[in-house]
Image (cartoon, rainbow, N blue to C red; front, side):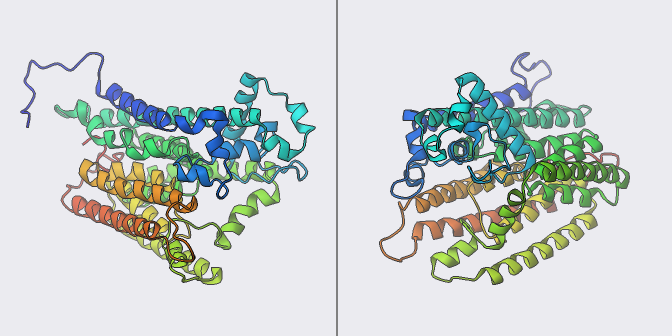
Amino acid sequence: MAGPVGDRARPSPWWTPVRILLATAAIVATLGLVVKAPCAVDAGDRWFSEKPVDGGASYARLCASELPSEYATTGLAEAVTPWSDADGRWPVNAVSLPVGALQSATAAVVHAVGGADLDARAARDATAVEHDRAVHREAVAYTGLVALGSLLLLLLALLALARASLASNALRPWPAWARPVAALMPLAASPLVVLLIGVGWDLVGVALVAAGLAAWTAGRARVAGVVLGVAVLTAWWPATVLVALAATALVRHGAAVGRLVASAGLTLAFGGVAALAVATGDAVTEPVRRWLAHEGGTGSLWAVMAELGLDVPSKVVVPTVIGLWAFVASVTFLYAARSADVTQTARYAFVLLAALLLTGTTYAPGYALWLLPLAVLAHPVWRDLLWWQAAEVFLVVATWWHLGDVTKPPGDGADVVYVVAIALHVVATVWLAARMQLSAARRPVPAPEQPYVVDQLGR
């Protein structure tokens, strides 16, 4: 092991820790795009294959992505606005307001660069447009742009976290300059980013949560509230971060919490009014209906029961899940508020979100990205994080193979690989939460004059 740095040692003037961090994230994400390059050949035929089942070939070859079909089958290829069914021509694209805006903007760039004749497409049958090779080529470009945009947002969030960490450690002795690299490198070099970039919009929520925590760390509670409010508008899960942050800081930093909650509430109210103004009824109710009907559940304990032949009806599953979620959220809030330790925000948020996802009706592959930044901020230990991510990667692959009929046995037998992957995922997530608890028990409580320090960030 290397010894301490001498008095004459000088870091590189160019390769600063922040630049190393950003370069690592860019290389890892680029590797993910390179790995997916075979999926994009021949106008993305692997993405649009319908044999042996819908999307079966893409699942079997680990080319699964919701983005190409999102472009080709929801009207984006004709510049149809999300949340609209174009008088029944396309199914309603039921997405959140920020994601819908990003979808429209990305599709507009694809149309402008590719010179698409939107009027000619609108005059054709929707099915013909959906299977048009030119549309498929544009869908490949659309997927690439979404992946690059997600990477850019992730880099900006990492930059914000690193700068906030450096500022909070500016008066401490060396190696304060290297702490952001040590604490944030597991996020920048995550195998999950390699596997899941270009699969969906999940990295947008990850980047917004990271940026919101960075704003809080820098002492800008109102900005943190706005950013986290936008994150909640993008996907529901950042609400767990907002709850944990407000709870841990409530006792010792009540004024800052008030500014945080007020700005987040105003953002959510404004976004909610805007969403109701542009969305049709189906766009609002369809996701809720699917959840209440327990449709399409994969990767969860309920999916294991269904795979083993234990078909629990929705009227039992949904009330059970709602009750468990209410109980977990209440207990987590009370414990977090009792601790009054804002440095534990990421740990409480990870435990809360993990409990909600483990008991929920579905655990889609992209959900692992939701837990990733919280896991890294709460417990930046490479060994533990890699073990947990190995289980998550196995679950993603097993889920795709299950959906592609690769590991399903003939007849009505259970998919053993799929069941084992879900079990390992549950065990690994609970184990990581336990490791966080043991680590927190040995951690000193920060001084009261340091109210904006995210869990272990920069240590």
